[in-house]
Length: 494
Image (cartoon, rainbow, N blue to C red; front, side, top):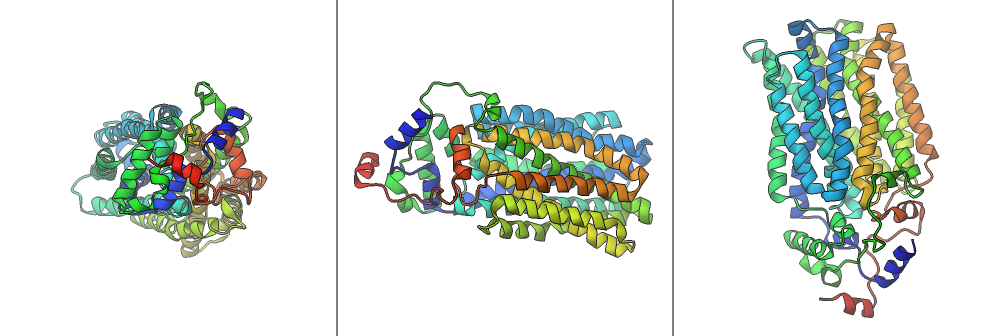
């Protein structure tokens, strides 16, 4: 810690990476970045929900049970769990970009190969492969995106991009499924649908390979200051704002000189343990309730209302559409200083828990559809805020590993969600929604217990800074730091 304090004194008045990004603002570079990440998020949303849409066809063609198809839904989460274990470590050790490329390639291979599976076992294996790719690239792409966005625009871009692109992906896959099932000649329409689902990710990875840079935050923590400064100048040039750079584009050095080796187990050190625990618990609750509801909802409609296959698709699509306004509700809430990230997440958990308790009391099919749309929107809003909080609270040195660990714990919850909720549905619809409600209440309790927030804070770079940054309220770092002293500016200028 003494070395960190010494480094701060030596670099006083010199802008941070985030000061420079804030000075540059958003522009052409960020719009292209949004397109790339949107395609990857859209493909992710399509792949996650597609098994729900083809489950009835698979049960009919391959004569398998609901429980077995539930295992197929869990296979992708097993893969994500495995991929996350390695993806976060690779991204923090070797960089965000190379890890995204590796994971994205595996994801595409698994997605395309799934369309040619000849048995449920092989389909499970290939969906697990797709999950490995997803788990490998998802944490670093989330981190890379957050690390390239100005502080005061991070919440908007992070929540709207991931939430909106995901919802659009869900809606599109429902539309494609309806069209293919009605007009495709033969019973193999679901194979074509799996190929369609891989298309956005392929396009996104091509653009990513060509245009995406490395994270300037990562470069700085690796001691590659000159590369980080060159990247910031390139971003400013792309945005047409080279004149906005502070101190000629210089950034303060933050890499530790202590010689300590990076370790994944630092996530459980005194600096990061509580952060890691809070993120893992809230992420797991979001994952179980979101994916569990997504999978079980059509089965409930089939059992309770004997709803035809096509109508189930429309119901799933409407529930996905309800996520769109919920994204903007989440953005509005996290922008309120009195709520920030933590209390916004707590409020959304609590409201969703109450809604889940009331769902079984709506007997009319239309009312049942509407209340489930509201529930899905509430869970999605909480999920969006939780994702923003997770990426902001971890330091750059462990941001990908921390989010990957959170994702891993969430996928464990996601693995059990389809099977456990199918078992609950076997007892009653009431029990199914009670399970969801109880978990959401648990999320409310954890969110209230968190003693820190990340509202309006710059991303911490080192583990020692994480808790300090999150708990320093309101004495947080300004969006654009104060003008450097003349002596510091003279020393920093090229």
